[in-house]
Structure formats: C-alpha cells, structure tokens
Length: 156
Ligand code: INI
Image (cartoon, rainbow, N blue to C red; front, side, top):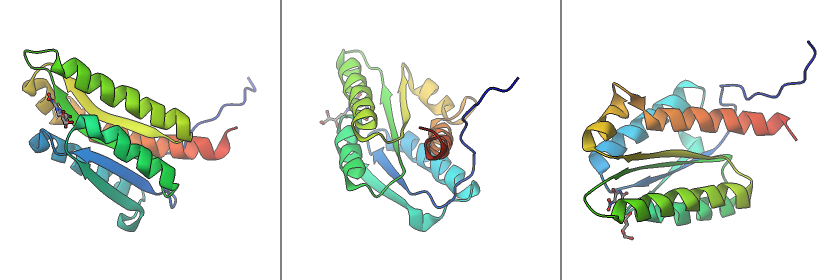
C-alpha cells in the first residue's frame, strides 16, 4: 500500500501552550493541571513556553481561551475544568456553554483547543478521571494538544 497518511509526532519542539483552568472544583482541577504540565514537560516542552490563565468556572473558560487564541502567542490551548452534575439543570447549561464556546474558539481561530474539562455525574467519577483509576483528563488533553500541533505543521 502507498497511502499518504498525516500524523502528529508526540514530541514538543518549541511549541507554546496556553492553559486555561477554572477554580471551581479546584481540588480536582489542580490534578488535571499537574497532569497536563507533567505531560508537556516530559515530551520536551519548556516551562517558559507555557502560560496559565485562571478563571472562576467552566463558563468563563471559553472567553479566556478566545483571548489567548486572538493573541496568536500559542500553538495550542488546553482547557481544564470540572463540571459535576447536581440535582438541577444547572449542569447542562454550564457544560454546554463550555463545550460550545471552546469548539467555537477552535474553529474560529484554526487552533487546537484541547478539551480537558470533566463533565461527570458524580464526584467519584471526577476523582477517577483526575489521576486515579480512569487516568487523568489533563494528561489526555495535553497529549492531544501536542499531537495536533505537530499534525497541523505538516498537513494542509
Ligand atoms: N463551574 C464549574 O466549573 N463546574 C461546575 O460544576 C459548576 N456548577 O456546577 O455550578 C460551575 N458553575 C460556575 C460557572 O462556571 C460560572 O463560574 C458561574 O455561573 C458564574 O458565571
């Protein structure tokens, strides 16, 4: 077979990352940040090439991500947060505003925006995805950002 295939390498070569992180549910979200930073640094990234913006909650993440994208300082943005379902429809609004807003930033700015926002039913599910038995969503988001940065360098 001779099929041209495009893939992103899993190594950071001078790429700059902007991380937007919410303070809401910070005891979980800080573990996502640890996972994302550890992943970028272990793949060759440098602390000087990473900037972090903190916002109150998941609803505020897209606006900060948009500002970061508009600055053109970053090769990828990583959004980190945790939205946990309660007994009211509030969860749906917060999760929906967050995911729609981030998707819009990605498409409007032609920039990888990694979705490291937990959207879960219970705190237990959130803990499982913040560095315990179901991995770390921050790590996953950073890996996706690294791969997409490299993919977009060589493709189209
Ligand atoms: N923000 C979150 O990041 N996670 C949540 O689970 C959450 N819940 O469930 O309310 C949440 N709410 C706050 C929201 O993101 C805004 O900060 C707030 O509404 C002010 O705009």
